Length: 376
Image 1: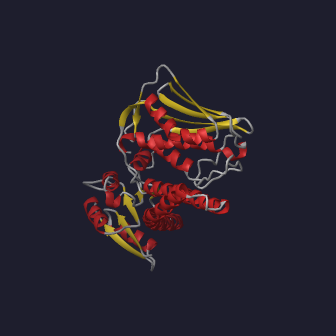
Image 2 (image 1 turned 180 degrees about the vertical axis):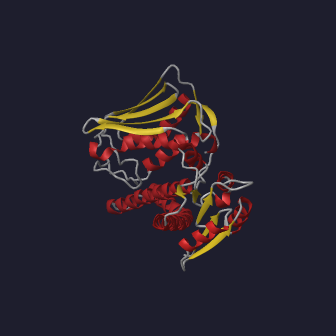
Image 3 (image 1 turned 120 degrees about the vertical axis):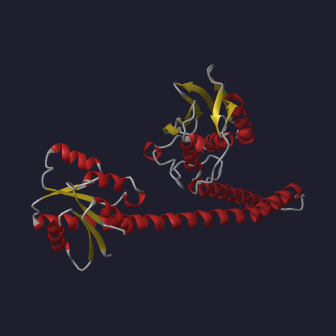
């Protein structure tokens, strides 16, 4: 990389001196004897560093720096002020406020000048390299999300056919189908449904990371919302004879957000509670207003999560050492998706748990949405 350096001074002898000090084969030195000329060069060239004299007629170094830092093209270009008289604290602070990253004082010390310039050019090269790597990573991430979304979408249709026809065969199986074959059929159905859940979660991850998971915000009734979510998973609870209870505070009425996304979160929390709870137990769902937040909790009487594993449950593909009580499958993505959806609403999600005594998962969202929430 060949560095382009701009030196700015209204005195030709100072420009010549700096040019001699800085000249190297891997550098191209540009000279300007006024603020106007410095701005013209800065807007035309991709500069690695600007050494800018403070005291100049018509437009001083502070004014030039202010313009450079307020312009997108030159905003990140490092500036070093070169001065003979502005050593007072107030002038140095003013220079730093205008965007300079360092000072050089006249008469220039050759060794110090070279050392500072070398260091700043090295830092600039590293910054450019990091930005390039970040751009490459961002592009790769976009390609990954595109591939993930396309693959998941394309796999859903044939997998859906497998589930549909397998379920049809199970419903129509007569006495001639052996118990062993019926078990094989059940394995096909359960495995296919588990794969469908994984594909749905992968699609959600792809949409979240690509910023495409955008939904309509509205005001909706909290009580109706929670009851609707409970009804969607009640059949799973009934199979294990688990009681689903619900209580709501007197001050809870409406909630503002994306009802579909928040429903996805609550259903995931209740479903997980059912998965990891034993038969003949209870799960309590509560809704309340605490300060300026709507808080919804799901408390079970299940196995609990070891304390050492609780901090990782919201990370993608994380599965704890606790196993479901009836062999239910888990993708390891549901809670990480829930966390992102709640954070997109400006809220928080958490877990409290004690081994052998059960877990409580809860989330909160603001009663009044922030500006960032309106962009979900």
